[in-house]
Image (cartoon, rainbow, N blue to C red; front, side):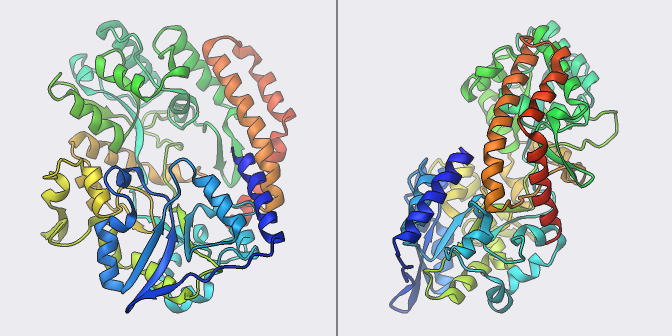
Length: 518
């Protein structure tokens, strides 16, 4: 898909440039209120009950505070990439576009050179004091610039440890019944899962799908290896070609052969996994704190009051040692709100966006309007019943989405602990967050940031990665299921090299080194 997008967008860019179309000046006024146009996706939590972000209480309040009206333009769900490409080709831009500009062919530097978006350095210095204060901090500085040092857009900045959102979970009530502790190593996991199968009758003690079991850091951390690309001591590596990955797959194969790992995992979908983890057929799976733990606990409240899902730490190579691989959000997170060359009043647009990085803006994004969606209690914001116990029957996430943007990535300072500890309604969710947050520092050291390949690099990398990842996924499935013996693993690594893995790593290393030099 990445290669298709790269080629398609390159073509439509060329078509747009050859057509000679100029940019369209879109900024206007309505009475005393200035108007800006803003292209951005409509979050699913909003679309369940509202037609536009313009209907969200937060943006209506922001219009009162700023005197700026926003005309939102939302592409149809599922057509975001196609609509973005068509918009770029037409060169009929709104004032602002929220998108992952890192994925633009050639990166955001190329988007600036293509006269699509505006380099913001001068405006940041003069009109964005709140944003400027933040981007001088090490954790945000590099991720907010292009390789050439240009500010190209306004991202979400994650605060503190609020970057963990998922990990391995298992039946806590079963652990208590069997007098077992939460597992910390692969050996302990083996003991627990076998007990689930033998003593609780779990026919698929560990369930999941290809993404959660072999495509995402989870059990691989117990073998001190990542499942895909990562950084180790400044060097970019590919987990399946590194020592430890063979042992990781050997363990999965053993669990698969012994009927501990769900033999249907390659074809499992969300509803199937939901049914297994709530029926007693399975006792462990990868879970999201907000999307899974609370949902399963709520579903089982009446059916089985003893039902409990608890988090386990990412497995360690040895007990007590911090794992180096886990699922983490970036400090600097897409989408980036960029200002286009069609904007007739860039200064006004920059000032409007900068508000999101102020303390008042952070409170608005995360908590909404004081006295309506939250009150200050003992110096901390506490959500009102409008959010926690919606009179209209909205879920907490739906109520949040109708009023502010805390629960999904968006421009500004995001997801501090005061939000999370209220969004998470069950103590098991708080425990999961606190448990996984302990190892954020360790896990961050191996995470590759959002690097920006040059145009010629991105085209070559898209081709190489498609072949490398396809081959990897095919062979991992064969190794886990036993269709390919693990004695052939070295031949698999040689196959990766024939697909020019070394060249891909070289290109990614070059882009990573440029990132470090920003």
